[in-house]
Length: 111
Image 1 (cartoon, rainbow, N blue to C red):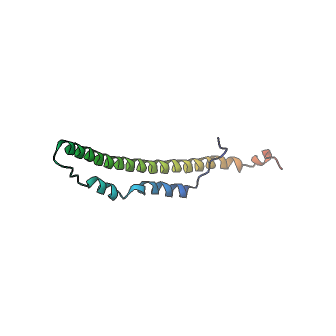
Image 2: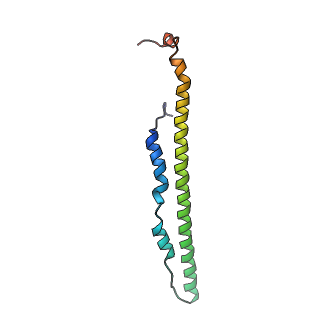
Image 3: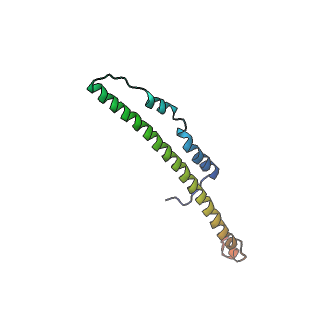
């Protein structure tokens, strides 16, 4: 376990804002899913078309799920960063009166 925690809030927040944009362009997936199938008009061909259409729909669903996951990841990273920054400020505020008190220097050993 680390003895201290350090983050660069501006970098973390920038990253958190970038993550949801990783899959903002879904046009290639939509194009793939919209490709018509013309396998024929017999049972095996119709079955093949059903399988292909199911895969096309599945692809779009996976893309949608991934977009949701990336958005949640960005949101949670933002919340975590803000919580760490707020907690650090709260802790610093609570310690300031202690370390600036006149009696504190009496307990600090000189090296």
